[in-house]
Image 1 (cartoon, helix red, strand yellow):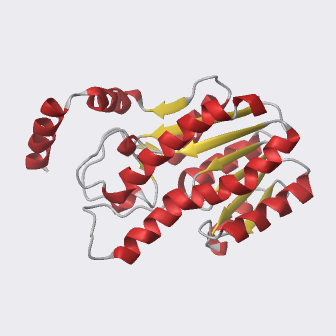
Image 2 (cartoon, rainbow, N blue to C red):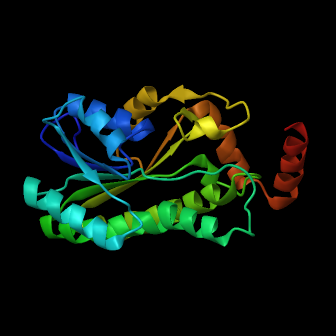
Length: 254
């Protein structure tokens, strides 16, 4: 989809902060109508102040399939089509998985995985009906490999990448483009939780610029910065007899 041409209808989940906020503002500057959803109305309304005519706010908990359907129906009713959806909503709790707290585990899985599936369940019938569409999954290099202390975040992002790979092939016949975004460390409220030095960290504005540039390409994976992604890709292909000793050394340095 040519993002330089205006009047596209874009739905961004988790649009109230971080990358979602920056992508919203930059897409509006390009002339697009952007619908942002999230759980916190206060954050959404702050983003809406950037351009109250081009930005529409929808309070949404993506863990509710019915609420997802209601929001998507309202977008379709108002704008007549949904050209692009960026599934950006997520939660992040760094550290080891606490198997004594099953409710917390279920909550993370519901937001980061089932929440995305709830959105897909609502949006796919519309995109198939209109015979075009563009779906973007916000994943992470944390899903490349089982990383120590990445917790359930890495688990869910790995699942999202696998899901996007499957849909890339399955939805081609419906003229629906699928991409996955694997950004490195971005300065957001989410990464502010990290208690370690984050290499090659970039602003959400710069991340948004690179993401939007990638939307106009034929590449499946949009990833950045390369200085981080390339070493992570190398880790991805290492055999276990090399990977595990390397991770042990890294853990001793943390």
